[in-house]
Amino acid sequence: MSENHEEQIRIVQETVAGKEITFAHVMGGPAPIVYQKLGLNPQVDYGNSAIGIMNMTPPESAVIASDIAVKSGNVYLGFADRFTGTLIITGEISDVISALTEIVNFFRDEMGYVVCRITKR
Image (cartoon, rainbow, N blue to C red; front, top):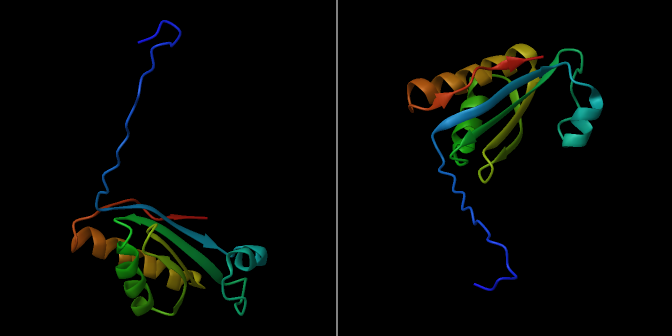
């Protein structure tokens, strides 16, 4: 090695997807601008509405989660991405909470995922 070059350290990082739900949150009564910016259904009663958002690995799990969500109650599937593992649903607050609860319980109890708690605001 030449004397002009300082010694460099090379770091290689690798991520291994686990079976987990890393984020589950319910936004109760979000401002209408949030719906608009996310491209979600604008035909909602904003006072009683909620947005539920989740992230999971492996990312294909979002497909299963979206199926559970729409079958669990009266929720609208706003976004499901099998490449990032993101799921966004909307509906009345109680329906969104119920859908996220169903998803978390199924993934934990039936599929052996590590799950986070559902947060609300």
